[in-house]
Image (cartoon, rainbow, N blue to C red; front, side):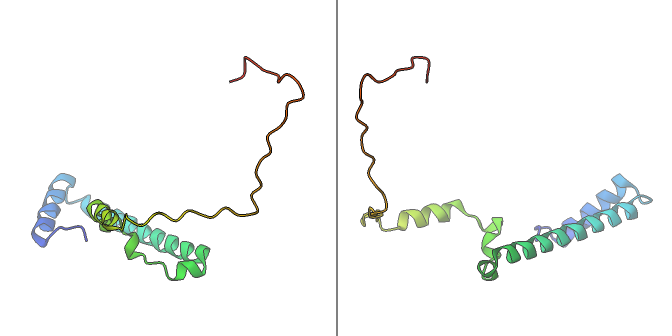
Amino acid sequence: MIGINGGEFLILLVIAAIVIGPERLPGYAEQLAQLVRRGRLLLRDTRERVTTELGDAGADLDWEALDPRRYDPRRIVREALAEDLSAPAARPAATSAVKPVAEPTPAGPVAYDDEAT
């Protein structure tokens, strides 16, 4: 998960035992374990809340796709460049619900405020 193999982990434990000291190390290890438990609980609760808030749309949500470690800007650019650019982009057709704005006809001189921006 973190990318640390067994030898590196053992070296980190020895360094932690030397720096922290053997008498305080169990207390710090317990605090770290509580922090990890709270973090996992927070993540689980957040995932459950997002799923309930989204309803049916959250049921088929792919959590693995949202993993930031899977973000690869080179792949995104490659996929964007591979799209067919020869087809014109579809523009939405004008609907009848949109009314054109009629130009107002001035009845006299238009008021001008030189202090307005």
